[in-house]
Amino acid sequence: GQQLNQSPQSMFIQEGEDVSMNCTSSSIFNTWLWYKQDPGEGPVLLIALYKAGELTSNGRLTAQFGITRKDSFLNISASIPSDVGIYFCAGQRIIQGAQKLVFGQGTRLTINP
Amino acid sequence: NAGVTQTPKFRILKIGQSMTLQCAQDMNHNYMYWYRQDPGMGLKLIYYSVGAGITDKGEVPNGYNVSRSTTEDFPLRLELAAPSQTSVYFCASSYLVSTDTQYFGPGTRLTVL
Picture 1 (cartoon, one colour):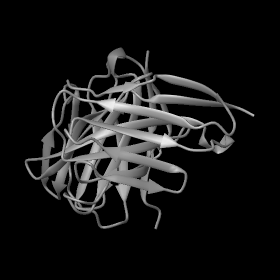
Picture 2 (tube, rainbow over the protein chains, first blue to last red):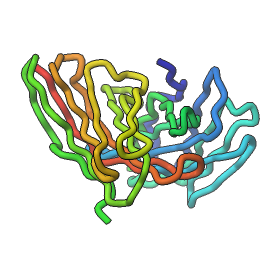
Picture 3 (cartoon, chains in turn orange, purple):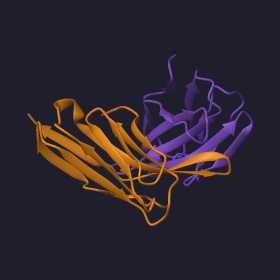
């Protein structure tokens, strides 16, 4: 089955640093989503992108929907300890009347205080 | 609202046993989804439902069955558990298909020995 190529797989940074991660696909998506997953919890939506070229911010988070519709990136500025977790990108298509999400492998973020 | 709830939180099964993973949502969402998450991987879609009485296969449906008799509930059934089904299972729901996003439950961690 298709999965998105998400990189990096893991990041170890100092508190206060900026973070950047991205996702690429061989096929087009109508929507790109970025989720965060804390240990023992389900994914929680951070940002949704609906149009090619769209740049959207949510507090310290900024994400962009690539112009080719085959990629997206997420930036986190001035990282804080609560940013620790696993970040997943997901591409969405509407197939047979339902949302179909394809997930990346995740980026595990660790922050040294 | 409780959102999406899942039971049990943890379960250990022996090979060949069967069990049902429960999922319920109180948001009156039409669309419900079951995913599995293997270690170090993103989520993969097992089954989904666009409304009561309507279900369809996702990317990895083998070894599973679902039913949707009510809007609120979407149980996932494992008939003959196999070690390959060791995973974390997430249920999700959404209201609209085009612009709404999926809300995830906390997950069920299943181990098959």
